[in-house]
Amino acid sequence: MATEIRRDVRLRQWAINYAILVPILFVVQLPLMWMVLTALKAKGHGLELRFIPHAGEALYTFDNFMSVLNDPSFPFSRFIMNSLIVASGCGALTVLICTMGGYGFAKKRFPLRDQLFGMLIAVMLVPGLIFMVPQFAITAKLGWMNTFTGMIVPHAANIFGLFLLRQHIRQLPDSLIEAATVDGAGEISIFWRVIVPLSVPIMITLFLLTFVGQWSNFLWQLIVNTPDSFKITLPVGLSYFKGQYSLEWERMMAGACFSILPVCALLLFTQRFFMQGLIAGGVKE
Image (cartoon, rainbow, N blue to C red; front, side, top):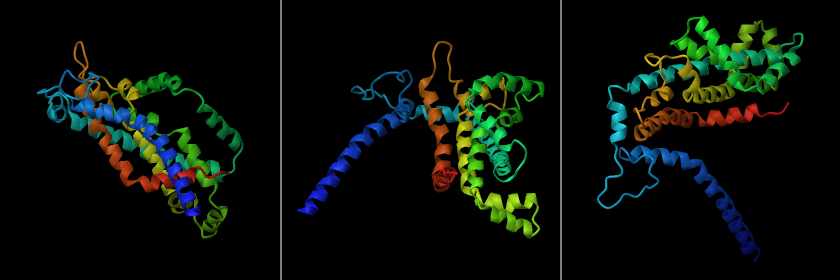
């Protein structure tokens, strides 16, 4: 009797869980399914709210994917390479700068340290668009328009990454640094041989978050590049599927399908480190 009661309780819990999770999963996956189905539709049918073809109708085709790859006016491979350079460069610089800054704020004592860190956290409350005009003015003044430097450097660090690394490094034992100091290690040696090896999971997490953010960055890459620039990234390149009176939604969605593949592959192979980093970054003080 007790066994049957426990089984009934488990079945009810299972039914309740799936009754909640399945609709949520559908809502979350709906944009992705819509993108794929639109990419598979024949030209002129992209915005139609039907997904079942009429009798004898060729509603679905792979021509859009082939067109994206083979269209000479759309250098897809160059857009992909530019996006990889920008996203990887931003990710690497962000990890390096935020790790060094996090180490300084976590383990070094200097006047107004906590007050300065609080001011940086307060800046996170300011909308990022407010900083875009001065960033553009500085970028143009330095002659970084249409360059990878202008696309990477303004986003080479962020306060969230600094906060994430600071919280992680702060919970590392001071005895490790003291032991390294006794052994004659300098600041650079302590950073590279003690702090960095113990922070690898959260550094990978920050790299992934930055990579994904910059991979899909449209506005800044549009601002710092002219239409004829060879440094245009994929999100900006996809906007070129625009006719005089309409957008080529089918080809645009096909390009978007290709654009998510590198990110999905990266997250798939680094998922374990990503989860470890999120857990490490959530440690309370």
